[in-house]
Length: 630
Ligand code: GCW
Image (cartoon, rainbow, N blue to C red; front, top):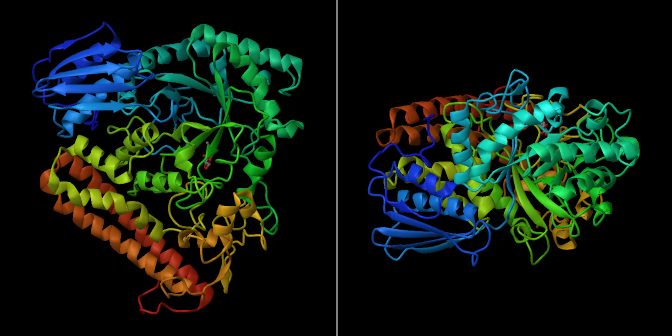
C-alpha cells in the first residue's frame, strides 16, 4: 500500500463480507474494498436496464445492501459509493440512494513526458513513463486506477499535450503495444485512454512532407493511424491535440482553420467512435509589450467563435476555465456558453502551477465553485451548461509517484473534489472537502478547524498574491514565488502595466474591448466598475492607487492590508494544524507541518516583495505604519 489514500483502502482488516451477484469485475472489486471494513454488510449486486449508464442505486435494510447498476460501470461506482457511505458514518437502515453522473466524460490529463518527468508536476515522477518509453510499477498503477475510478474518473490521457518526438511514437506499432498494456490495467475500472497527438505526426511518424489537413496524404495518414490504434486499443476514447499554441505547429500556421485541423482527425476517428479533444489555448506568444491593442484573453474567442457549428460531431473543443491561464482569479472564458453549436470540454488544472505548487495549501473546490457560478446570461450560469453543450469536464492532474500521490497530503482533496464535482457539479466545496476529511482522517468532529482552514485557503493565497485579478506576478518559468515585473516586458502577453499612478488593464469598450465577447448581461456587469466583482477589478479596469474600494479603503491600502493579512493567516494555519496534532497520525501531521512552514516562507516573501514594489512605485506609506521592506 502506498501512502495515504485512505478514502479507498482501509487498513482495518476484518473478515471478508458476504457478497453475491453476477460474475464481473465490480463483484471482485466489492470483495476487495470491503475486505478492509469492520462490520461490512451483506452485499448483493445486480444490473438493471432501467437505470442510465454509469448510474447506481443503493438500497439497504439492516445488514443487507443491494447495489443496482445501470451497467457494470454503474455497479462499480455503486460499490465505491457504498464504501464511502459507510466510512462517512452513513446508516444502512432505510438507505435508498440513487446517483448518476451529470456528465459522461470525466477526464484527467497527465502532462507526463517520456523521460519520466511531469510538466508542472509537483508530486514526483510519472506513473506511466520511464526512460523514454512507457514503464510503470504494475501494482501501483492498479492502485491508481482504483483511486481514480473511486471518484468517477472515466478517461485519462497519459502523455503530455506538449508531445515531443518520443511521445509522438505512441502512434507506432511499438508505442501502441506498450500503451495497450496500460489500457488493460485501466479498462476494468471503466477508464479509457486518450492519446495526446502531435499536429505534425504525419511528418514525424508518417514521413510525409506536410501536416496540412486538406492534403489527401495527410488525411490518409490519420485514417491509417486511427485504424492501427484501434487494432491495439479497441475502446480508446480518442486523441487530444494542442495545436498553434505556445510555439507548437497547427493549422493556422498553414493557413487553415482550427476546424479544418480538427475535422480531418475527427473523420479518421469517427468509424471507431473516437473523439478528438481540440484545445483552445491559442494566443500570440510573441507579443511586444508596447503593443496595447493585442489582448491575450481575447485570442481564443477570436479564433474559435467564428467557427461555431463548423466542427464535426466527434470534435470536443477543450477550453481552459479562464481566458488567460489558470490564474488564482480570472473571469470565465467567454467561449463557454458562446459556442452553442459546438461540443465543449471545460478544462481545470488540479496541478497547482500558479497556485502554490502543492507546497502552499490551496483548496480548488472553492475555486471551481466560483467557475460554475460564473454567469453566462442573466438566467444561466456555467453549471447549467454541464451535461448540455459542455459534455466533458477535464483537469490537468496533480499526481505523480510520490508516496501520497499528490506531494502535499491535503492536495489530495483537490483530486478527490475534482472527481466528485465532475460527477455532480451541484456539490459544494464545503461538502466535498468535508467528505475527503472524513474519508481520510475518520469522522472526528474535532477536525472542524481543518475544514475551515482548507475552505479559507484559496482566499488566503489570493491575499498574498497578485491583487484583484491582475495575475502574473510570479517568477518566470517556475511560476512559484513573487516577481512583480517578471513577465512585464516579455512576449507572453501577461501585463499588469503598473506605473507610479495606476495599475490594471482597461478591457472595456474604452480599452481593448474584451468585454464585448460576453453576453450583454455579463459584458455590462464587467464594464461597470460598480458591478464588476471587486476581486476582478484590475483584470477589467485600469485604476489609480488612490481610488476608493467599496470598503472605503484606497486601492493601495487594500494591497498593503491584504498582503499583511495573507501572511498572518498562514501563521494561523500553522497554529491550527499544531492544535490538531493529537487527532492525526504522526506521519500525516509531520508531512503537512513541513509544507506549511514552506508556505509561510513563501507568503512572507510575497508580502514583502509586493508591498515593497508598490511602496517604491507610489511613495505612499502604509496607513498603519507597518514595516515595509525596501
Ligand atoms: O500554463 C501553460 C503552462 C505550460 C502548459 C500550457 C498548456 C503543457 O505553463 O506548461 O503546457 O499552459 O496548457 O498547454
